[in-house]
Amino acid sequence: MQDDQKTMALVRAVQAGENERFQELYERLAPALFAWASLRIMPVMRSRLDPQDAVQEIWMRALAIFERFDPERSSFRAWLFRVAKNVMLEAFRHLRGGGGESAMGPTTKMFALERAPESITSFTTQLARDESIARFMEHVEELEPTDREILIHCGLEGLSGAEAAERLNLTREMVFKRWQRLRERLRERRLGEELVAVDS
Image 1: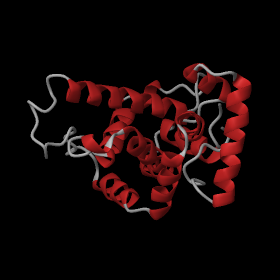
Image 2: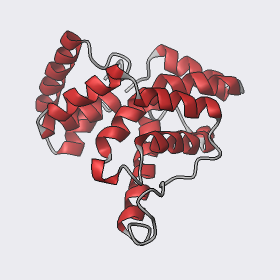
Image 3: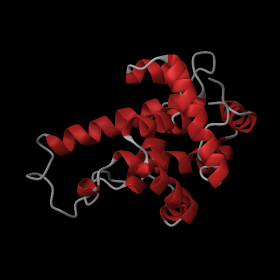
Image 4: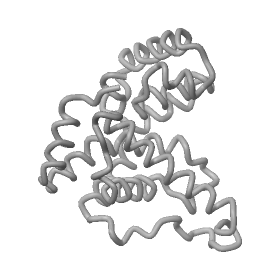
């Protein structure tokens, strides 16, 4: 799976030392991260694990290990979503284990985000109010479970059909056909154009 040209141009610029391009890279991928986190975090957990906070934490973790990204091994989107999954698994373990209800009050947030720049915080707040993202998530939530997982894996995470088939224990042909149908439906309804991986 390859990144689109704009994303890779930004990644190369950051790798070359243009740290001011981090914000632009964030704004390019944060909408997909926010939709993904919102779909993965159940409403009952939102008082302690907020999608906005999760997105900011994911990005800060990614920045901390940015030098480990190797474009020869994966796309930047796929790498970023691996970081996202690790952050989310860590958060879920914390809430289900010793750091859950007994250790945290109902309004205690999972992540302490003092280190997140104001520009990132304000942009993430805008995402939570974005009507196009809300409509996309409503559409995804209405899908039957297999289609929903295919859209999340192929569309948001940027996995190939073959990778998604392996994850979901389905045939490649089934995933390719269903993903093609799902993409066509998104185009018809003009949903998720800024969220879905270009080459997925």
